[in-house]
Amino acid sequence: MDWTAWFRRFGSGDPELLTVDHRGFFHSRAGRGYLVFVLFCACLSAVIGYGIYQSNLRWFVASKTEEKLTALELVDSFFSTYSELRGQFPSESVPVPATFRAHAIERFNRARNPNETLRLMLVGVPGREIRIPPSDPDMAEAVRALVASPDTRPMPRHVVIGDQPLLRTLHPSIANQPSCVDCHNAIQPGQHWKLNDLMGAFAIDVPLAPFLGATRREAILIAGTVFVLACGLGFYVFLLQFRAFASDIYKRLSDAVENLADGFAIYDAQGALVLGNPAHRRYAAVTERFPLSAPGEVPPDTLGAVSREVALPDDRWIHVSEIRTRSGDIVRIESDISALKQRETELRAAKDQADHANQAKSEFLALMSHELRTPLNAINGFSEIIRGEFFGPVDRRYRGYANDINDSGQYLLSVINDILDMAKVEAGKIDLAEDRVDVAAMVDGCFRLLGDRAQAGGLTLGVDVPSSLRLMADELRLKQVLVNLLSNSVKFTPPGGTVTVTARIASDGSAVLAVADTGIGIAAEHIPNALAPFGQVDNRISRKYGGTGLGLPLSRGLVELHGGTLAIESAPGRGTVVSIVLPAQRVLVFEALAEEVSG
Image (cartoon, rainbow, N blue to C red; front, top):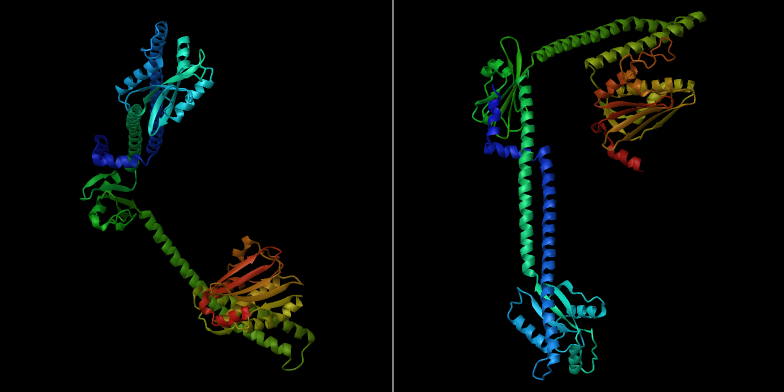
């Protein structure tokens, strides 16, 4: 099928596909890059808005200050000229300049809206004013600063009077005319005004609230416009990048699917084929034998929710699996598993053959063990008769030979018994004769069997087993396990060493029996070999220690028949600890043991 049709919806701007595309976009690397770009645009827009706001504010302050200073200079020049003319033509009926200016400013202010335009005031120095004192503490402080400063330039500043922000400009009013000084001294005899004294200040307050509100709106509008335009342009660029990347991925995916050896097909929710690769068309016979499942039969988002193995007439096997996507489409995958089936058949045949061989081996060992036991019993019996001189005295040499024959026969009989038991364990033909077992008494019996060997080897036997511990087990088999473990410990422990048997109840209620020695130890990598049938840690013909290598594997098999486990912890030169763990259900006296241990 031509994959071009699969991408046509993507290129046509299908709203549904665009929604999925955008959702995938924000989870892609391009989408994460776009989110970083949006954050950058937000910071940039905030900087631009703040810059515009501050720029407009500085422009407003500069322009208003210049306008006010020009007006104040014009007013001051007018009043200075008025003062000069009045001095040349004195008359009591003509108002003094200060009074004239005060009335003129009041008239100017009455004609204006105080909340929208500037307000003009002529205030005197606090404590020396003729008529109008400063209107607020900030103005009084500013006038005092003008008096104390040698700088007589106008002073613009931002103030907040009540809740209204103002742009306030103070222009010093200086007595630069003798007539002005005389007039003030006449009105205020005790002030002693002099020429060039600062008699007050012109105060112009311009409300800032309307301008600040308009400036904020303008800055927010410009910043928002920049942010929206930048984000929109960035989204378009990043989306193009994402689409180019997705298109490349889809093309690679299509090439990969087209060249798949497995059949691959996608069906829509109505069961119509949307696309399929050549391998799917080759498996047309599979579709006939195993039609597409109904949409309700395939759970969503479950890999291999519906799967089946189909046998074709040409002896091929095809594994068919169907998966339903979130959009409702069904993905069908068909894999040729003929080689796997052939391999399974071969493995099954090999397993059957191995089982038959193992069964034959076990039967052979059992038969040979039985056949060997009969003459061995005769050998052992007759050698005991000769060694015991039951029918009269014999030569001392014959008696020694009989003793050696009996020892060798007994050893060979124990080997044959171990081989037979191992064969039975592997064949699963050992039945446990379970009964109540006194663990302490059982360990004591094992020590009596091996006490002479331990004493001859210069070893010390130790026991730490609670006397109240009782288990449900096959005492004969459990004792056989302990004897095997103790025999190994006695064999591999040099003179002066110790062999200890302990028993305890673990936190999960299971019984743990351990045989610990201070012998030569086993390297960790050799432990699996020691647990294998006929395995020997030392495989040399001239090895120092004898044995068939059946003790440990036979012991593990017997423990596992009880539902337990056998583990070995050892290191060269540090001794060995073999732990037997039996399940909690085999512990019969747990409460009594707990009381004994706690006491």
